[in-house]
Amino acid sequence: MEQSNNRRGQRNDKPEDNIGNGQQFSGEALDIASRFQKLQNSVILYKKKNEALEKEKGELINKLHELSVKNDQLQTSYNELTTRFDSEKRRWQQRANDSDLEIQALKKKLIELKDEASRYQSALGEATNVRFGDDDSNNQVQLSKAIIEMQNLLMDFTTVKGKDITIDEKAVSELLTLYKCKTRGKPVISAALQRSTFELLVNYTTKYLTRRPKTIQPLPSSQPRQSFQPSNQQQYQQQYQQAQQSYNQRSSMNQLPIDDAYLESEITIHMISLCNLINRLGETRNGTDEITRVTPVKVRQQVYAVLGSRGFCKDNHPIIEKLASYILENIGKYRKISDEKQLEFQYKAIEVVKKFAHLYFRLNAQEPIPSYSRYFDAGNPLQNNVMDGSWDDDNMDNLEVEICSFPLIYIQGKNNSKKILSKAIVLPREKEQC
Image (cartoon, rainbow, N blue to C red; front, top):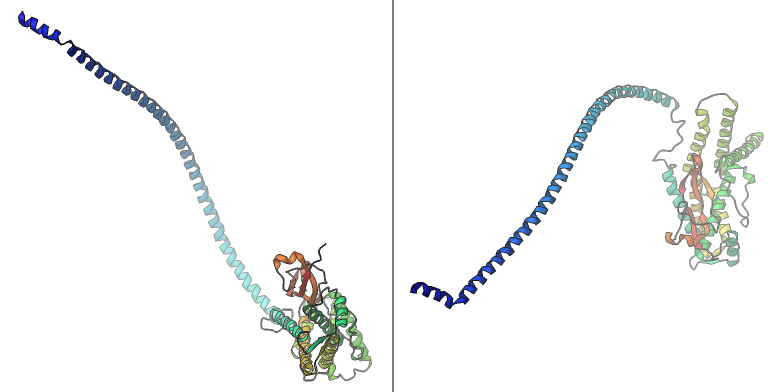
């Protein structure tokens, strides 16, 4: 009993020990409850994620089903297209085989036609070919080079620079007024002299070659000059008529001996007369041959080609000397050259005339005959496609033509198209501000 009471007494003696143990148990319970709550929250969260995944899984299964259905459809379409492709391939292969047979037959026919054409070509020769070969001096590429040489000779001949050259201000002012120039600088004066000289060469050479010798007179230098070259059919027909009249007049005089100085003129007049007669034959006689239509063209081309090679090629040719004196006299009204330079410019004048004469013949040997009388008047807008000169493309809208020193040379094609052989040489000026 005593022991039992002692034990009770011991327990009663320290009641705080029992209180501490209860608090310890309570803290552990709270910790367990907290962890349990977290686990419950995690379970709820994972349930929600699982539900979302299940939903996404269902959507993916549906999409997979849809894609499977589309795949089946595409596979069916592919199979159909493959079948159609194979069918078309076989059909086109058959057509290709048939085409090969047709091509072989056409090639055989082509060879036969070429042989037949060759026989006709051999019979006609080159009678209907109006084009010059690549190596011919009358070829358009060579012709373009000759035009550039002519331009350079004119620029050198009409120079107004240097201490040996004096300008007649009054005469130059009249010339520039004629061409409606507003500036009076030396480049403009030289350009005006180039144009005046070229116009004189065109006019006199045309008259010399198509009129009787006694009718040829120097052109009044003070009057504006217009070109008479056959740049279109109407002008060419007028030349035919003039040449025919001249030829008839000489025929009525029992064909007087031809003066050697006018040999080139006689050849040209006879050529024009012959072409005129052949054209008349084609107009008044029935027939369907091509050679009649082409012959006048070929005759003209060949005669001018011959004259372009040998015309005026004679030392001290009187016509060359006369024309050289004309252009020296014309340009002498606007500038004076010192005695020391007179002989030099006489030689230059001879070279200018010779170069122009050969260029004239080669131009008229073309088919169709180019136009070489197109000058652009002062005040016209600049056009890069038909004009050449020194200007900045970015500033073109503020510029206009001051003077056109060398004409536009072109061949008029079908549908108003133009083949440019040489652009017009132009000096620009500033536009007047409104």
